[in-house]
Image 1 (tube, rainbow, N blue to C red):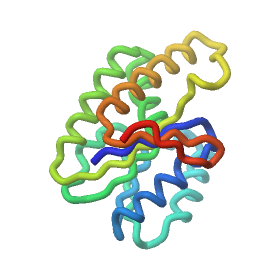
Image 2: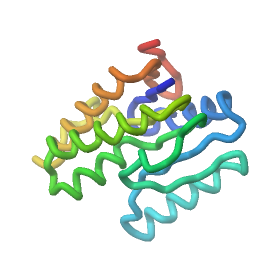
Image 3: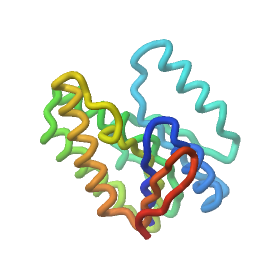
Image 4: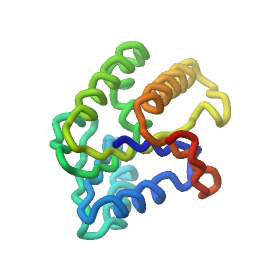
Length: 169
């Protein structure tokens, strides 16, 4: 089963996804995709880890999520935007190559047997138009990946001001 939780910044995506994971499993996996860019970002990561109790298994994985054994487990992937950023930076802003690799990685991850994935992503294209060329390229990458993930998901929830709106499933 694949759940995609999407919405704007601070729309309640992560809280909703965490509650869903705990409804589906007593011992969910939390996969954080953030790269530790600086000390401030590390503090943000530490704060998020402290918010989750002993029921959670926390895994930090920047790109190769399929290396994690999800078989028979419920896993929360938070978030696609940070995950895509890692591909985008490593591939010097090549949208096609980043999209191709991220899709392939997702397919490997989703093909593991008896797996429940809860994926958090951002609708960055619904916000302010990116000022830079690279920002616009990343917005395209995010939009195309979101469309791909939504096509694969069994259920898609759009978070609006903390309210879940089911749009698929």
